[in-house]
Length: 96
Image 1 (cartoon, rainbow, N blue to C red):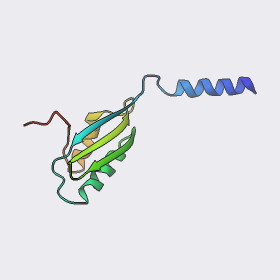
Image 2 (tube, helix red, strand yellow; image 1 turned 60 degrees about the vertical axis):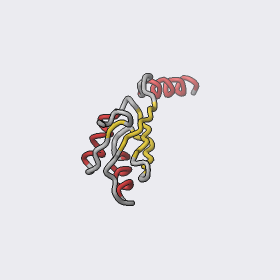
Image 3 (cartoon, one colour; image 1 turned 135 degrees about the vertical axis):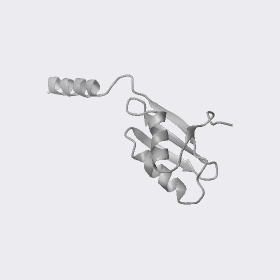
Image 4 (tube, rainbow, N blue to C red; image 1 turned 60 degrees about the horizontal axis):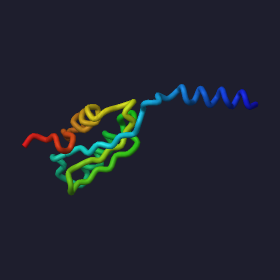
């Protein structure tokens, strides 16, 4: 029984990359104009594989997204919001 559990634990560890880490990024989504816009943006972000949490703030015009960096990245998040009709940028990198 101990050997079986040890093998199962080893397989579990080998099945997930050791270098994967949760990351959080804040996206500026400046063209949200109504109360339903954040819902659409959140749904688009949650469809991206690796996203564990997406919080969209209409008043601040931003989305805070936590994701597994072994499965996705900021570019994929930006693509998701843009494809949903809401172009975004990583906060601090917007054009002035």
